[in-house]
Amino acid sequence: MKIGIVTLAGGENYGGNLQNFAVTKTYEGLGFDAITIPDCTRRGIRVTHQNRSTLSKLKPSYICDVIRVRLKKKYYMKNQRDRLIPSMMRKKKKAAAYRAAKAKRTEAFKDFFDNQIGHTDFSLNIDNIPKDKLGDFDFFSVGSDQVWNPTYPETSEIKFLTFAQREKRLTFAPSFGISELPEYTKASYAQWLSQFPYISVREQKGAEIIKELTGREAQVICDPTLTVSREVWESIEKKPDFSTEKPFALTYFLGNESNRYRKYIDRVAKEKGLQAINLFDLRETDYYSAGPAEFIYLIHHADAVFTDSFHAAVFSIIFKKDFVVFDRIEDGRSMGSRLKTLLDTFSLSDRMYGEISKREFDTPDFSNTDSIINLEAAKAIDFLKKSMKI
Image (cartoon, rainbow, N blue to C red; front, side):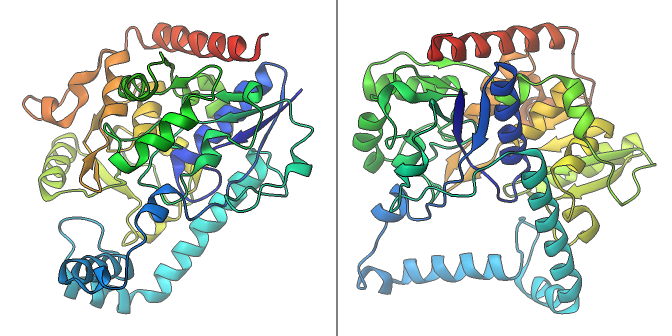
């Protein structure tokens, strides 16, 4: 039997690629031929809703927002400590190095997607559903990761599998990514969600959203990266080109790394004698170009991990690393609900920065980690089997 996976496929996000790999391996472990179908939609529900009139675009507030966003993107102003003039000078001085690092990173992610994740030679698009190529699929699965996040421009009804027959629609721990949906999404989301025979989500808050919208109970199951064994992850990890011989602290921030966060990280690293390896910071070109396989290696071999990334926290738990999790804000909304569910599941809620910063940095209690992973993975597999009636 054949399953088509619809998720945040490809792209240059560690968690997105690694959960895609894990979804594939989990379905293969159940005896299915699993293949990812890329979704190339770029004008989803948010973009459609936010189409503005020419008059509204002349408002000073809108113009200022556009200028700020474009300047940050152009000059790689990612963190609170980044300032415009130094960023402009740095980009001019290191333009060639930045181009090379970005090209190397793109190649690393492409290599992982092409060689570790089976995918179709066609894609989906909100304006073009190639139904003639979908007929030989027995099921379609959406998830995991933030496939239902309405702030993402690619989120559309495709991520709710509306192109497929109801009985062929599966959910594998999809996430909304935020704790509250914008009002303009609710009617469409309620309609799309009501068409799934069984619904799973990755976070408790997601289950509450579905209950509010549809009156249905959704089952909270773990992220698919936890349904794949530690040994499998170790088998695909790759040592990066740069040196990791000295003890190091790995930092990985998708959102704004505030000055307060950086001061805390620097203090702990200094106390423990750790050099810092800062991923996803273009200023550190060697580190920036690391791909998904290197990402696993770096967490596996780090002496401490500091992150606002859900999947960096997951792999810190899998490999039993000292770690601290920071809240992440996007579009003015906290993305902490998924981290809260994860940490609560493992009784590690004290690893949030707001808690651990009040005391001396210590080692988490991982005494029950393996048994919890096994239990949560079994729950997820049972849900999938129930959904497919096997």
